[in-house]
Image (tube, rainbow, N blue to C red; front, side, top):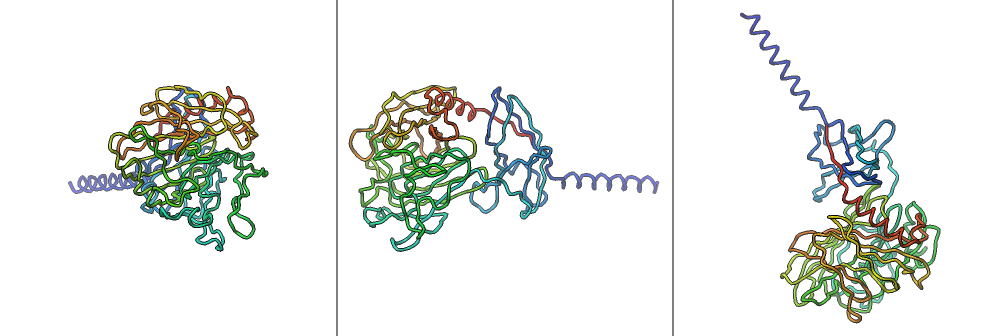
Length: 429
């Protein structure tokens, strides 16, 4: 009898130890499956931390397949100081499955991944101060360059890029989006927009080895900038370069994330006075490698029900018809292709990839007023619900010189939209 009891106790102890071993075992494998029949290139993959078994929170993930290491970064999505997801990009053959080994390492052992995205932001408080790198900014409605008498920001505001193309946003109250054409896959120099004395200088409208600013913006919102249509009247977010006061009471900017495979910028526009109403807007801009563009997400608060989001596509130098293409169930594209750069010197294709579910056609901006020189995509929006769209820019002097051909650029936009629609199935073991 005693031997039976002892044997039973031993078996229970063994099972308990085995269960504890299983409970303590961290996730060791991630399987990624391309569920589409298309080849995917630099396809973004987001793996939520909550799906992973983690036994040591001080360690970080590394993904490998044989001798190949997959560059990744961990992202703090909710800004609480703790990472929430793994982000990486990967190439897939049609319907391919990839089995990736998941290891956990100390922070100092994280591989030195090739940097394929970047954010650059510098500012000064007075005209005499040198420009210094910064990660955030708060701007009041009275801090316009026309009132202050000088430009505070390197390249007029933050710039972001990947290995294909670069962009910048005029944080000085205009809130337009401009294009940096890139001839190289490497990151452009950190001193673009400042001189040797660390003063703000417009030195990016001349050709350098890396490329240059190429888009004429004027009083448009550039490519991917936005406003509102309130009671059928176009309302600009922000001011013109000649204005001394903005219609946005307070603007908050922050570099949310900057890493080898993704960079994210966030903006909060507080008390935007437009059409007799007051709105708050949250904007998030994200870029990753491999795409000639970026994703933009906009959330508007304070909607009265008579508004539409107006997403801009500058047409200052465009003399060709706008193309409107229904790509699939998910996306509609607006495309222009012409000598759209300064002095119409080079061919530049521009496109907006817009969610079909909320797309409500397009219009031309008024000939006069605060927002002109644009095609405006009209998007149906609901209070506090985010809407995401993509901005594409293909320059004939970029690494893909076939962008000089209008049909090639159109096909690129269509392929990009289909890549965005393609889903990657994630299994964690």
